[in-house]
Length: 129
Image (cartoon, rainbow, N blue to C red; front, side, top):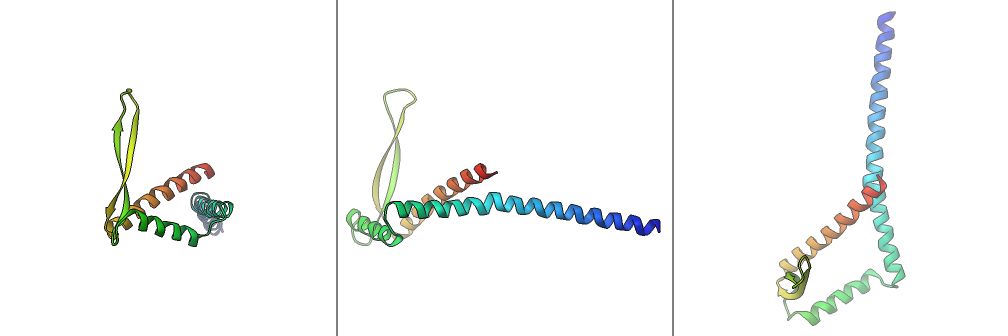
């Protein structure tokens, strides 16, 4: 009888530990992934709604910018170089566009978007946690 009772208590304790671990994992998933991504989606919708723009209009604006900035078959890639002022501690970046091939354009666009999305997601995740 005592052996049966102790095995029940051990089973109950194991279920309790598993339930607590699962609850903690779900909490982490909710507050570090789901809520920040949902907030980012809502922010994107509100920004587009406020400006009366659609993703199609943004795409047309980008295509027009590429056509105006770079020669045919080339794409504009932003390049920033640090420039020091005469004042100590002051630094300003000088940015310009250079013509690049499609692979370089895609690589630069992916890099800049990933930096933006990662920074926004990390900020929101820290805010929710």
